[in-house]
Length: 153
Image 1 (spheres, one colour):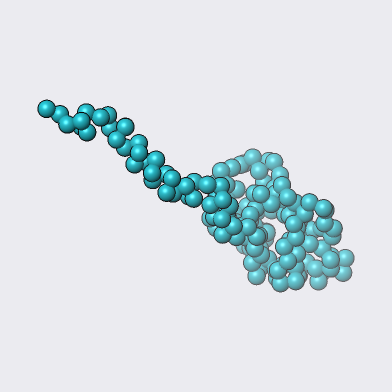
Image 2 (tube, rainbow, N blue to C red; image 1 turned 90 degrees about the horizontal axis):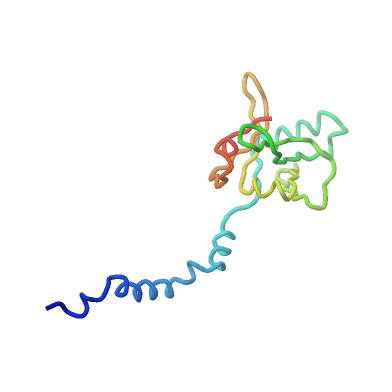
């Protein structure tokens, strides 16, 4: 003879266990926990020493570039559907974010900032080119792996 417990379908036996577990761990499933977790992530954009050095060189090479900032943007195009665009700029727009490190400033518009959170801007010199590059140490972008790797001017 079968006991009443074994005749109860498995789903009915485990449902109370899962419900209890979910109630106990509701904090992990709540949006406030997601906000707390996202606040632990560093959303600033970092400049390497090479990048700072090169920007200072550009500023000192001409008197007219003294107040110039490096503007970094993300535009449509390129192999991944997006590409980084670098420019020297002397003004900011109302929707810009300004990051200052070592006496130089990086300017990023709000739309591009969403793609660049946590990125590092570097300057590399190689035999065939010299360029500012963008890299994401822990890339969470789903655009394309190309965008997560180094992108040159």
